[in-house]
Image (cartoon, rainbow, N blue to C red; front, side, top):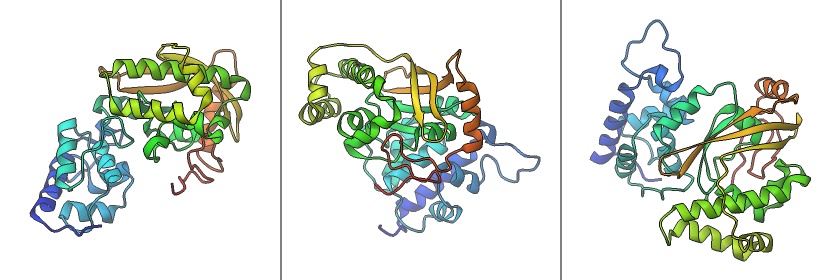
Length: 301
């Protein structure tokens, strides 16, 4: 990585400090505490929210250290609840290209992040319309595995579903056909909602048509239907089958969705989801083929 030391990197540190100062701990789900000597968040709190070490974040605010990666910039933008314009400015200061709108480092709407932060007792995550996971709460990681660290086409769960058999371990085999049809119909609806000739959606669909005869056959059926809610069975490597209702909240442009999972009525899923708090991500295998390993740590891509 390039060393940081230019005027622009000094500005990056100043910009981070200014954004940190305006956020109250309660805005991001942190306790306020009786004494706070600084306005807004402390450096260690931003580091915690962004998944960075405190020393590394301190270096960034000083305009020193190494150039932050695109993934780190995206994490800082989410931690600091930056607007889309502020996020793009942060990439500019760090001399990094602004990522494509629907990619794995896409900007998450601050309102969705706020809602996600308030969903502390149920698994929840934000995904794109092409099923790229952007951010998950801890219970979603415990239930589904860490799906937020993948890049390229594999970042899309739809792509993994039709090209990687390991991705299908998340669902019982008897449900695979229904899930396949649902994914294809949803993808067609999402592509239609985008501008005609959208390169990102077109590239994903073209790759799937080339890689998966199953996808090609279902695509030829021309079914169109957004997934707005769904009752599904998930296979957890420790808890076993967990039947849940999956609810979707769409952003105004339809490019992002907040998904949250509630126990299905008439099942023991409420008790099983309560156990997730105890089990966390310990000894969870890789149910979705995402690189999720024992101990809850994502393995290298």
